[in-house]
Every structure is written in structure tokens, then in C-alpha cells.
Length: 142
Image 1: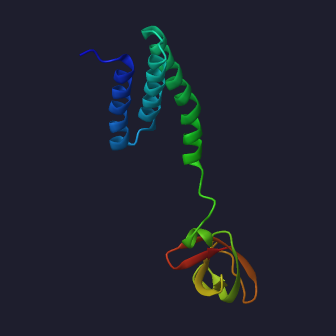
Image 2: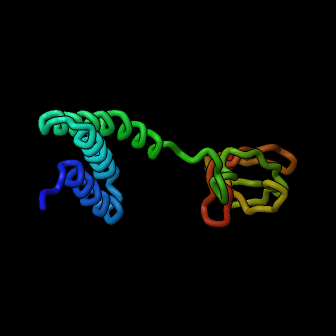
């Protein structure tokens, strides 16, 4: 029984797809797509050299184009901040004097304990402050 070349390329694509699922390495998926393109070339009657060239060209093109886009997308911070990350950079109103030792602010409709970022600064009741970070249950303000 003689198996056509396009079948071997599809077997190769499946063989690349299995470790793709197990390891989540997108490069293996790009190689699998290259193998499918070579299978199509073989099915259309292309010779072995053309099949290998199509496999290499499609695989390299996908890795060269898709991989940098995926890396750039993965490196971006999420646009929607939630939890304490959403509170950083917001304004608050001082309810009780805030200094390096502590105090109280109203932040996002809730009363929070707060302390000054700079030990030399103090904020009086009614002043508006900016939240720099959240340290546990305490807002650090300036």
C-alpha cells in the first residue's frame, strides 16, 4: 500500500498539533499550518521540492509575522483595571488628618485608612489627595 505525499504531510501536521496542545507553544501550530499548506501543494500535484519550499515558506512567514504580534499583545497591560489596581491614581477626600502615621480618606465612596507617601507631608480634612498605591488596607496618598 503506497500512501500519497499529502497524507504524510497531514500526519506531520497532526504530529505537530499534539505537542502544540500539550505545551502551548504557538510555533508548533505555525509549523502545523505549514505542513497543511504542503499537503495542499502535494494534493495539487506539486513535486517534493515544491512541497518542502511551501512548508518552509509558510512556516517561516507565520513565525515572522504572528510571533511578534503575539508577543506585543502579551506584553500589554490590561486596559481594564480591577480591584485595588483600579484605585491607584484616583482622587480622594481627606476625612481625618493624614500624615505618615495614618489618617482617613473617602475613596470611591468608601472610607479608607491612609498614610502620606512623604513622611514630611500632612493633609488636613477637606483636602483632595491622589492615591499612589494600596498597601494592604491602607491607601498611600500624596
